[in-house]
Image (cartoon, rainbow, N blue to C red; front, side, top):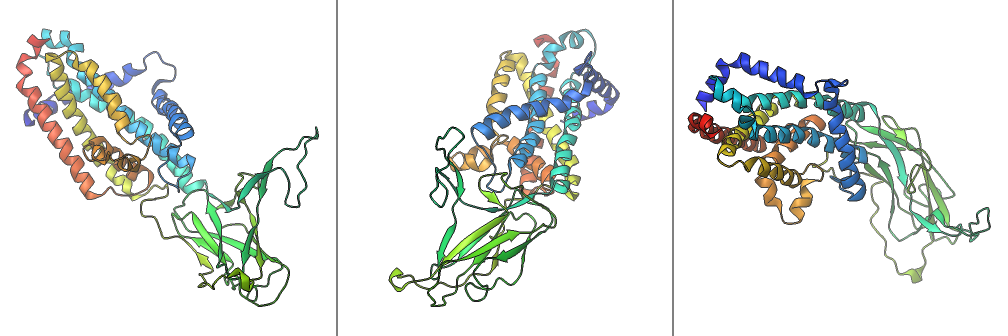
Length: 438
């Protein structure tokens, strides 16, 4: 391994020339040039989004919006494309350059290395697309706020009047079904939603109205705002009716959202289950109902934080990016040395690698979350997959401003150095046979 590294250092100028030549040759004659390095991942993203998101409804968690899922997929696609391209080309690089190796004294060890460096440079052209998407969605495009309202498809309104179209035909439409709460039924949490987590706190004011009297008919709410901690997407305004032993008509409590700070109000009608207001009906408790009293909840409540969810953001974790690039290069070049040498003994290796890359891609959580694999009992596949460790580490750094866990980095470094050692040793041991094998 040290001998190969020493040779690469001695021939660094030749290595640089090969990298530059390869980058120029990628899109020679193309009017768009290196811009294709940006377009290809985006085209792949649309294809895989259609299959895995729209058709199979894959998502990383309940808190992630469709846009977040798209960015997560894009990050994985950019990394995997560079890796797959390098392995595919490196496997056949000695055969492709047989004339060069056989006719002159040529350091063949630079062939897999320059392909790795060329692919990494090409990958770094596509990474800014991911970073710009995270910058925009995580720091500028504010999430939207709405209240969850239960709807049902009915052919009539709440008063019983049917819905009739211009031709006199009865049709169904979504109708908001008001919640009815009895005085001893407990409480009702009015759910306030964010479309996605945000890296900063969000304050959502609200107004309370209706025929019910706060502090008499239901527990006083006190504050008139919800402050969402960073990364939180759900908050509850709890309405707890107070028992007044007075027979009266049902009373209403209406919650209306005000203009948030750090977010926007979701437009009315943007989704069937979203609105800016919600009305709750409170009815008297009757002895024959047989309901027992409940403990009053806090007026404002947020679910416990989910440590597995992180909002999109950029930050200091980007300092780890050079380390990931180095580990990716070491792992890929080691694999390239082994495969290009083995391909001389068994020429079918090139075709087997093509199939293996496809299998490896779908065995790696690029278009679906890793927990889906673990739930099906195949978690061991993730434990032995270095590309899963690498892509997850890239996503932590590029998307969430999270430094990858040290055990994962150590495992990735171990896999990279072991692969490089084995591949370089195998290549070096057979380097004298290469001209004859070609």
